[in-house]
Image (cartoon, rainbow, N blue to C red; front, top):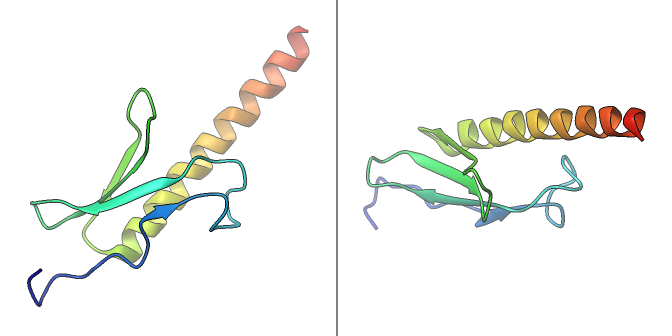
Length: 84
């Protein structure tokens, strides 16, 4: 690893390690060849990914995307409970 590269302080973000999203699948983070940081939900279909130039920004992107996913799941749950 080059001296100017950062190493991610985490390898996955998930419900066991973070209280800000309790029912989510773990996030996997990695540094790409483009020197940007990337995170994805392992095994998600279609792929769910976020990207940023630094780790602090990546964490904010993960939080933002997870909030969107949680809101969507909540809304879908409310709609399905009205149908049944």
